[in-house]
Length: 167
Image (cartoon, rainbow, N blue to C red; front, top):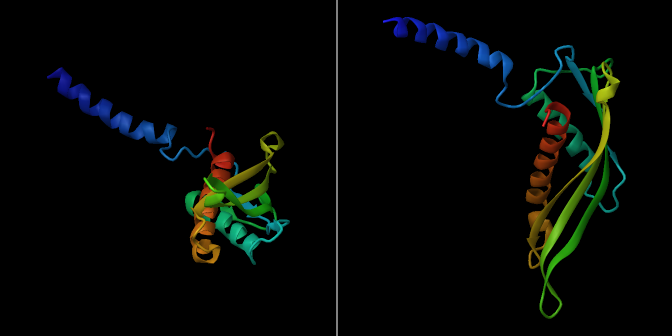
């Protein structure tokens, strides 16, 4: 009888307390941070596709907008992102006997600067890189959209995790 009277209040208390101290997403944003800004990326990569800097700028804005409570502010943001497209290259990978190449690889590298205007100790600069492999018998134009989209999604996830998780 005492067991039944204790179980429900304890379970109810845990149900209320646990969500307040743990996030399943792993996001850790200081309560004082409420706004963000993503400066238009620069493109320093040779032979990159047109408008790549716009794609990455908008991708990061969208990732932050949909996955956080932060509000976009281009005048006095609490945190700020600056990015540069550093490298965009297709290389040959996985050579086969007879000097044939089986796989081509598209690699994109972004240099990101994270500025926390409320806590300068949390500022960082980092390069983020990701690649997409495709058959050497396939023309790049045929896989271009799929490759860039896959790389962009992974890069945005990596940048987001570096900025907003304590992992």
